Image (tube, rainbow, N blue to C red):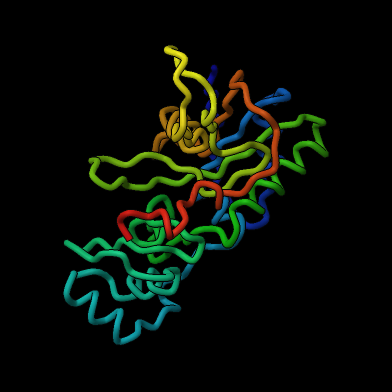
Length: 241
């Protein structure tokens, strides 16, 4: 398996076409998987927020005062959240409207001009599908697309990249019903391959290398239609809710 970085020197704007940038940067093969950082998707889709336009609510003011956070950022986090899971040491762990459990609802001030913040795409599955379809239309190459973002992990230090949108692959490789090396039937072994591919791609993408896109090549997968919802654990199975 190969992981091929695609460097993008220019600052992505809504007028840019990410599919065109990819096709002009690297030749694609059938069966490639594109992993694309959420940040450039958000920038291209106009999900860049001018913090000067935000008027904090009393709730945001109270939280910001207690945790010494910018009240406008807190207000933006609250507007992107379905519920607050935990608040501690200035960190807000929330459930986004998409169903993701993450810090600060994906609101991010890194790698953008001061006074602005990006928020997650409205529907990263649709974002991935548009890119997949346009690349097929323009190049004839049948590829899969993963939109990734950096999340923390419960009970583990450090962050890893996770898939927040997919098109053209099953995000889970389910071994249920197959036999292990001792001919015992596997029952609950389902590997989140979309997350693992996202994490592998981060090793070449980095955070300051101007490399928001990577190609996964020579990884065997079946081209299927699935949603990122397949990776979100149902509420009735969540032991920590």
